[in-house]
Length: 261
Image 1: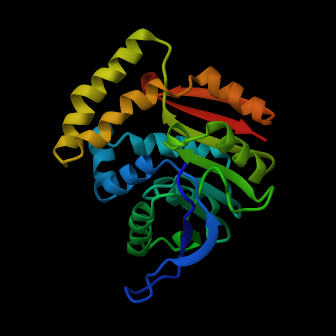
Image 2: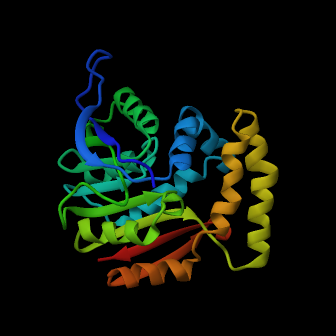
C-alpha cells in the first residue's frame, strides 16, 4: 500500500499562470504506485491516443455513460478517475451553470491537463467544474452528497473494487445512479479474442509511436483480471445498490454498469 499523500484542488476560477496553483487539501490518498505513475506518464498524449485508438468512438461511449447517470440541470455530480476531464465536461453540459461538477483523480498531471482544457474552452457552464486530486477508495465527501456519479475506465484499475463501489454508494443520494464505463470482459470467445488481437496489433503499436508501448501492454492483463458484466451487477447489489444493469456496447468490446442507490 502506498504512503498517504496530500490532495490538491484545481479551482475553476484559475485565470493566470501565476495563480494557476492547486490549493492544498488535507485528505489522504491510497493507490497503486505503478498505476498512478502510468497515468501520469501518459497524461500529455492521453486524449490524442484515445481518439486514434477508438477512431473517436470513445466520445460516443462517454456520452452514453453520462446519459445513463441521469444527471440533470442543477445537480451536484461527481466524476471519479476523471483523467483529462472528458466525462466531467459532458456532465457540466448536463447540469448547467446552476449545477456543480467535481472531477476527482489520483494523477495530478491528468488534472493539470483537465484544468488547462477548462481554461481554453468558452462554454460558461464549464466554470462549474472543480478538479480534485483524491482517492476513489476514500472519497472526501459527506454521505448522500451527489445526484449522479460517473466513473470512466477507472474501476478496473483501483486496488479495491468493492471499496470503490461502496464509496460511490455512500456519497450518492437515495434513488440516484452511478454510471461506470470500462472495457468489457466478454464471455464470448470470439469477442474476447478480437479484443486481445486489437490490443496486441493496434493499441500497443499505436502507443509505441508515442514511446508508450510498455504503458499500454498492461491493458490485456487488466481486462483479464477485471469482472464480467454479471459479476459487476452482483458486486453493486452486494454493496447495497438497489438495482444494477450492465450494458454491452461497441460490439461487446466496452461495457457500462448502471447502478441505482
